[in-house]
Image (cartoon, rainbow, N blue to C red; front, side, top):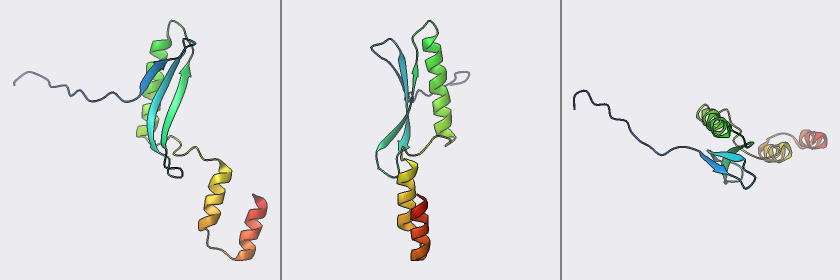
Length: 104
């Protein structure tokens, strides 16, 4: 087909939903949490107003960019949970381990 441009229509990533308060919630899938195995989403709330829809679309684009560039947090684990996990796999002497645990 000469002169025609094919525009692939894939699924739209992310969603914008209206909350009972009138605010908009932007939600983007960010992968699986490596520690818990649960799905991980980035969310942002947009206050109601005349520019809410445009602001929500900008937020969706920004969150998708973070996911695409892998700048988003990959887990919702706390620092304490991450340190516990680190100490499980750490290969050090017993006295060093006790010292590390004392700092936590």
